[in-house]
Image (cartoon, one colour):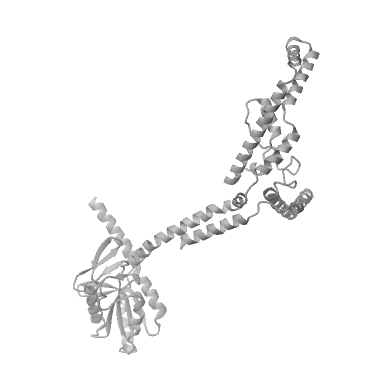
Length: 429
């Protein structure tokens, strides 16, 4: 069921991505851009809650313009103005060249987009920023090489004379003039701003984002939570059978007790859970004892959950869970002893019924012996007895006799068993 749900979720996300539009119309972008500029001006004169509200709207408009209008003239490109955050003004330059002159030209040529200036980038934005940086670097290198070739084609004679003047003349005036010529030659090597703008436009067309890129930008924050939730559901699904077997093994009577309390009338039936009563040879724990005018019911709750092989002639029965087999004492041998102890305690000879209850999921591989039921058959078995055999005075007397015996504590018994096993293992070591 979980796998089907995951496949359905994947199909919905894929269908949504196919139909997702990565850009808006020109008119929508223009409307968002006008509102974006208007709010930017209003924020300078606002404060308090008004400024907070305008800031929220400003951020949403900026996200929309950057995500859906990046290939139009209305993109929300951050400028070095008063509204620009200080973190963007002082953003660290990307150092790619050891040549200081070339590095300076690169810094004036390329400015990272706003989504690449945040401290923590998503995996999608990291990939986009890396691809954009590589493309701009390739364009810059091409223009740099072209400008160097143009400089090489200049009159070699003039360049040699300029260089000889720089080297030979010590005159301050001539040195300044030589420096001026040198600076002019350097400026010729720098890529023009117009060329950069044209290349930016061409690059924007080439690096058009797809619907999936834009979709993952918005769902990436929730993707990890969905994966963790899916893993938790799978673990619960796999661990649930083991947890149920563990609960049934130690507290099988709890589910039976809740089931009987829900369906039996409190005016006619009195339930005693895990009560210890005297029998021949000591004390015995009875999982459920029911007093009623229709008879007394002694219920033994079995903790087995797998396949059960029952043999009334044997002292042990067999449980199989997977490939593992375990033997357990035959409850058919224990039930008559507990019935005899209850009859002796209450001073009666008849109308005491014994029932052995297994979990509903137990698979009997042999014929079910007499007085052996599964949980779903228990209520019908008890309500089958409709004739009153005890008076109210007798019931009150039985209640008085049973009040001297307190129910046992299953949690205390469980911890005692764990402690004894641990102690035995220490002695064995």
